[in-house]
Length: 145
Length: 342
Image 1 (spheres, rainbow over the protein chains, first blue to last red):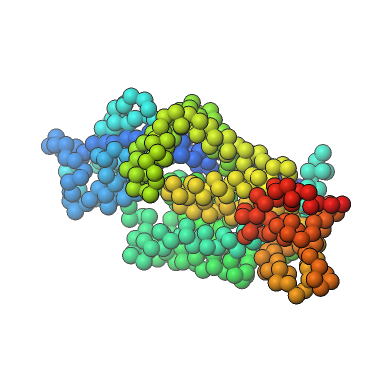
Image 2 (cartoon, helix red, strand yellow):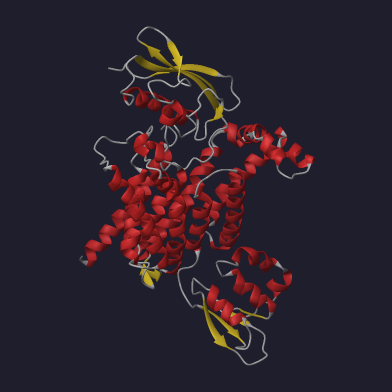
């Protein structure tokens, strides 16, 4: 590689890395997952959720009860999601935690082929943002096919 | 201006610090890979449980190939540390660790992101040579500083954090764990007191910001490094942060001035100090020369100032990576400060 090309390439790489890092730090203030945002121990927030399967005959079955050979804590073993009914710290912040919970519902809904009765999964979430009063929200997976 | 910028990036500097970081990064990568490798031994991978792709187009490999890659990364990490096929090993480690990180949003953690950055810059630097261009070192310094700055800034602008609510609640909820430690009751009372956290939170935030800025400035650099080590040890003791503490402490070596053998230590060859310095001077900061028998150790610093006897020994150990943290405070002693002569 010619000397001039090398100099320009070096310049571009350094400026690009610095700009990208600054972008990701800024993005951490609005993104759920905050990749490369380096916001450590952001909140003391906690959450818990009652997660149920809503079946085609209208039953609401807690996911703690195994179904069709599946166990929730084996399907979703990480990220503090394995026992959602227990109040836990939202390690990387509430937005991050609830985004993962929503994705987990979607993943379970579409990766449990032996389950022929569940229409969708639903989580009734109680969350405490730091010292604030609790808030309740409902998250649903898409309808299963 | 642009010419000066180019000169700064292209200047040939010592690769010792980056080579040392590469050696330290190998075990850190192994520690990072351990849970993935442990799962693979039981036939489990990320694909068997909840995961979430960043993009549909991101390639997912057949399970045996994926597991093979993880083990290849482990072998490459060992080679990286041992200095075998350095460029290939470092690039391979970086590529696989990065590929694995971006396989799923569930793989992402701050410490892993930092590890990928460090590995990427190590792969870009010729750490198998004595000298190389300065730009990977500059970028690594920027990233190291950015980690502290981003973390500190996010806490500074959050009233709950800066006001102490976050730390107070975290400690109060962990009170059972705290009481399980062999701590006096009054310590537990203080640590769970709301007013204590009003002040403590500010100390934490300002410590992070001080490290971020202090590392860049020569008068505060050693203090910032010293404080950073304490900070990471406290985090490691009190929280679960995977490889972050080890990585962040290892990266501190990049703040050493990237030049070699520009200080002189003259030691009586009969004394063991000479061989100790040679063994521990991993950044090659000293030229060891023999002095007359029976004479006290003498150090000539970069600026020409000289120290003799015990202050010289304290100074030398304050500049060696393994002993620096323990001996840096001794440089504040009046007897050591007075010992510097021109």
